[in-house]
Picture (tube, one colour):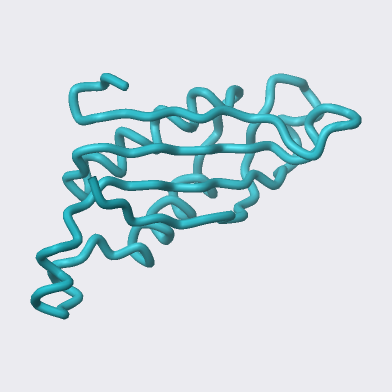
Length: 120
């Protein structure tokens, strides 16, 4: 399957389980890999046949900026469901990282893969 991707999207989010985290916005980092048949847009050379990665990134940014979750797992699941529904995706992989969340690490987070039926 072909993929359309957005790499290293940085957004500030209200996320975390600790009281101090509930009072601030923290940076998160998101990579998206979205399944898409790129043969049709390649043949037509027309934007309306593509999975518009700019639109996907804007949707993710707007959603994350308004979100209020405790767990990165919850945010990742909700993003996957939103993108699958909005863009009629057959498959998505989301890497969602929280830089600096664990002392001594660059980043911690989750990687999920989903299909419209919720399976991996």
